[in-house]
Image 1 (cartoon, rainbow, N blue to C red):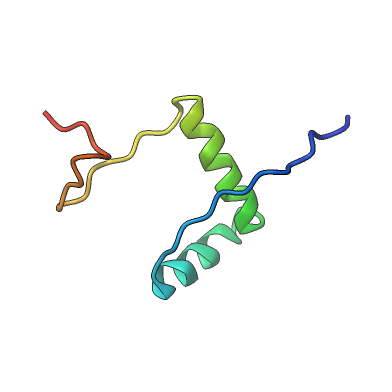
Image 2 (cartoon, one colour):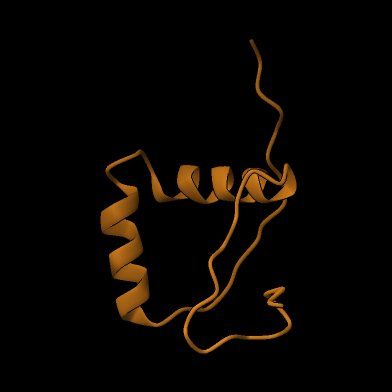
Length: 64
């Protein structure tokens, strides 16, 4: 089964500590890029729910 070519990029800046923690945790499941790809797909498919942090960013979270 052939895979679809991946020709587009998503990127964001994070703190070095966030980057390190993500890579350590993501490597338990595969490559960090595989985990990010799955997170993006899950978000598109409405399979992911993000719990708001203590300090809510109103533009990202729907809090009643």
